Length: 330
Image (cartoon, rainbow, N blue to C red):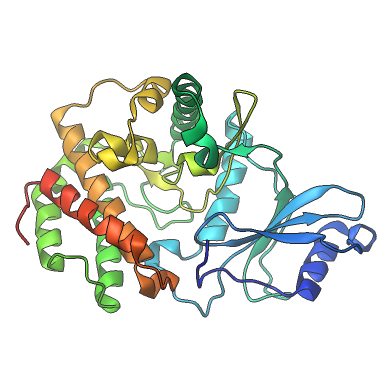
């Protein structure tokens, strides 16, 4: 997918990166050794065939000269930290990191190599699957997400800190960052920004029930799941992780926002019971947060999209999220 955040590099730079990671004797010399993986909105990723035939993936963070949203700053450092946590403390399959470089010597951003995962992207094939097979995969995603959430932090907030003992302060701060991003670039969200703030304030008391910081993937959509032969073989793209409330995870989104699909199989795999009234309020707040981000990110100024189709899709669902919290007038 096209985006101004994709920090593409010349073939010479890609060769230099490959040499630094794997050594000069593994740098490819044949034609067609590098191809861009088009899936994804944020980082650029290349599939590279090394001289010995091994296939690897190179991910490069956006240039520091390209404006990103506040919550996206330092995303690759977050991804590397999350991968390490999951590999050391869970059985959830995630990529190994072959080599990471944050020196900014070969290009102006962080980058890392990982092995290429030879599997299907669930988000691409899910609509072609029989219902039973799709549900079986989503149950596995739910179980993996629960295991990820089993990891505790010492405070809520970014993995690198600063943390806070109050989930209310952290989450409302995250949402405020998004609103300020939008105001700074005059993004039309279809609502007064202060109306959104008022809605959040009215319901923020529900957040106080959350007292245990848990590792949150937040971006664990089916498009970040690789599958093969009925099994989940890898979870990818961990750059949006933080410590928070498990109910904010992507798999629960369909509870309030039907456009995101039926969450029944995910919830069954996760093992979560029926939501209480307070949990339902929190889930609505999390749906509002997601839709605000989708409107901001998909809107032209933060990704450079000429086609507004996705933005046009997101706007009505933001209105739906506001309605779920009692606001139907703008």
